[in-house]
Amino acid sequence: MFELNLVAEAVVVCFCIGLSAYTQSTLGFGYAVLLVPLLTLFIDPKSAIALTQLVGLGVSAISYAEYTPRTKIRSIAPIALAATIATPLGAWVLLAGSEQTILICVGLGIAISAIGTLIRSKMSTDSHSETIKLQILAGTVSGLLRGSVSMPGPPVIIYQHWIGGGADQIRSRMFAYMIAMALPTTIILLIMGVFSWQIIYYAVPGLLAVFIGNYISQKTRDLMTEQIFKSLSITLLIVSAVVLIIRGFTGTN
Image 1 (spheres, rainbow, N blue to C red):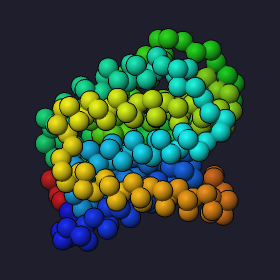
Image 2 (cartoon, rainbow, N blue to C red):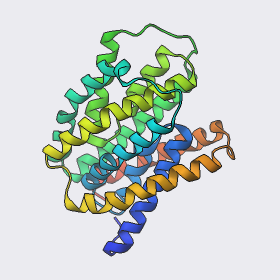
Image 3 (cartoon, one colour):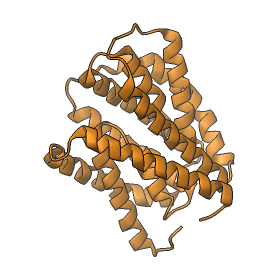
Image 4 (cartoon, rainbow, N blue to C red):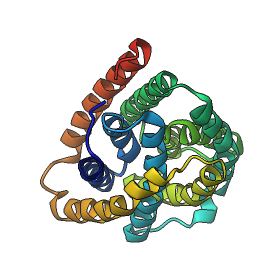
């Protein structure tokens, strides 16, 4: 972990947040899986995950507000409810685990995201009927990942691609799910004492970085094809996962 003074650390953290928000806005995914490993280079893993979650509330709100067609939040209520119930258990893992355990969990979370991205790129375009059992399963796993490593997307992304409906509808449903989960999850983690004053200190300018990242994405997202960007993203995710898991097992900072 690199040692920086408080001001320099805040600048670097905000840059990482802006870059991650840019990626999320450009691809429709990737905020947490990019931000968490970057932040662990400069701040401790628990703080990195907590900061990712807190700023993620703003990322979710902006993404949902600017995207059309907009999915009504009540349509994804079963998944969001299951995820909300499972989130405190994931947060307990975050609070109780050692830094090495958290690094390993984050690495595994990123690996799951990379695998999920590969799976959904190979999936059939056929649509399937929604079932309450699969909604609860996807929501529960998502809640566990959200509370522990702030990476709720992979199981819900895979489920949304399974029921199909086209890229625009899938992206719209994902943004609706993220905003539906963001506020209750933030409240739960606040009650559990996950957010410190250091996290709030970074989060305030971090929200400005989110707006900047989204603005740059809107102006530049057509310069690179989505397929190329996704291929590069998967490679980065796999490398990040391997590095974090090795750091977790070896205790290397």
